[in-house]
Image (cartoon, rainbow, N blue to C red; front, top):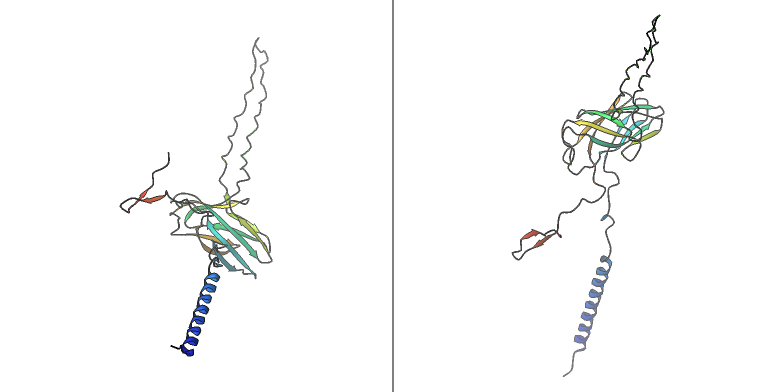
Amino acid sequence: MTRSKFGTRRRAVLLAGLAVAASASLLLTGCGSGQVSSTADTVPAIDGVDADLAAANGGSYSVRNLVADFKLDGYPAGSDARLAVALYNNTASPVTVRVSSPAAESVRLVNPNVAASPTAAAEPTTPAATTSATPSAGASETPTAAPTTPAAPAQVGGPAEVTIPPAGYVTLNQQGQSYLLLTGLREELNEGNQVPVVFDFGGQQLTVDAVLAVPLSPLPRGPAVVPDEGHEADVAPEQG
C-alpha cells in the first residue's frame, strides 16, 4: 500500500505549525516571568496637600505638603496635633505668614531646640540700717531681704508667625528647627476627616485642609492565624 505524498506533506506542515506555536508560547512566557511592573513599588513622593495663592504685588505664595503627623489612632478632640508644611514666597518682597485654624483653640510655632527663658528674678536689696543714738549693749541689726519674684513658666511656643524672605521658603516640621502645633482640637482628627488651616500671607488668606499623614513604615501585623481541623481560623497561641 502506497502513501500519498500529499498526506505526508500535510502532516509535515501541521507539525511545523505546532512547533512554531509552541515556541511563541514559550517566548511569551519567558518575557512575562521574572519582571515587575514599573508601578508595582511606586510610592507617592508627597502625601500632603498643596495650594497656591496669587500675590497682590505679583508672583504667588505656595503651601506644600501640609499634613498632620501620623498617629495610629488619630487625635481625639481636645488634644494637640503637630503639623508639617513648607511655605514658599514666590515674590520680590518679604512676607509675614500668620497661621490659625477655626478647628483648634490656637496654632503655635514651637522650636524644641530653644528653651523658653524665664523672667529674671529681682535682685534682693538691703535697706539702710537705722541705728539709735544710744544703742543698747549686745543689740544687733539684721537687714531684711526683699522678696524675690517667681520665674514665669515656660511657654509651649509663640504665636504661629514666620517671615519668609523674597524668593525664599521655610520648612516647618518636627525634624527641623520649628514646627506648627494645633492646640485644643475642637473635633477629632483621623484618617476619615481633615482640619482647616488658615495661612495669612501679609493680609491675603489661603485656607488649606490638613489631612493625617501616611505612616513611614508598614503598620505592625496581628498575631498569626492557623486553621483548625474544622477549617475555622483561630489565633495561634503565644509562644512562652
